[in-house]
Length: 334
Image: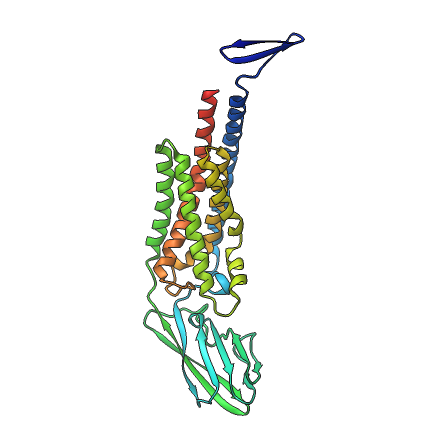
């Protein structure tokens, strides 16, 4: 076996065959980027299909899509205004903006909720116990109540033989300008795609945008979880996070990898961003309803949905082109 140096690198000769070693790392890098380019093209088509399907589902689904804890965005809030007669130890309150009622029985006898309020009734609450339920007579879910309109409701309880009347009211609130919030989400995604085509280091832009989408998604899920009073917080958070438990690590890990100059990082960021955008689509009901299951200002929730949806979709769509550009640049260096 002999070897010789050449401008291209080191050539090993053995048995009449020549093997070039000097540029092997660069060739491997080029092959990796070419793979990323092909993966990006496939990924881009997949993202468009996912977004189209998810958009169709969102457009045809009921406007009362469930959030954390099964709560929904509604037109009104429900509250208890009177309990007659007022028995010492008996407390009935509306929680989660009236989505559920909570009865605390501090009396010496059982309290029965008669039938008529849906599947959760009838029910009997023992002395010293607490019961939380969804009552069709009191919940704002599925009801259309105009802004400023009030709709009274009444439930009759049996407190150990004594009839107790619970009176409440649904109060309608003003709906947001849905078209403006949809436009904000769309323009966010479009602006990101256009900007990615102009920047020399669009990979860093996508990594940053994906990180912002992740943070928005985390705050959104956390706020939705804190709005739930009728279930344990840990289980509610995990349920509300859903597929984001995969998407968030993908984006964060992908961002770290992308900052090291690896195309695989951008592919991971784009995959996680696509999942984030698709998963947040049911929450666009916040663009249409005034009362939101979120522990914070309603407009903050809408901004978070705009960022998670707009940036997530924008990163996913722009990612295919960025990966192809990275592959072409790598091929030009080989």
